[in-house]
Image (cartoon, rainbow, N blue to C red; front, side, top):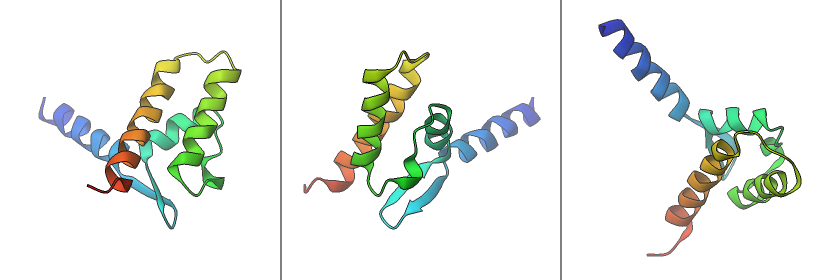
Length: 88
């Protein structure tokens, strides 16, 4: 039981660890895995807005299986962008 909990904790930490993509762009490991799965070239992007545009193109132009997962990533990126780029 204790090992299972530790495995869950380690997995959660890994999936939520931030990876630097460019000077102003960081993504969670989980987000990168989803974007890779859908062949979205986030490595060429310099902003969250660019990634959101690419996600929107995929959602609009293709029949996407498990589109909820991709929408979840888009939503989390939109929230990140809002909270970090909006003057309060």
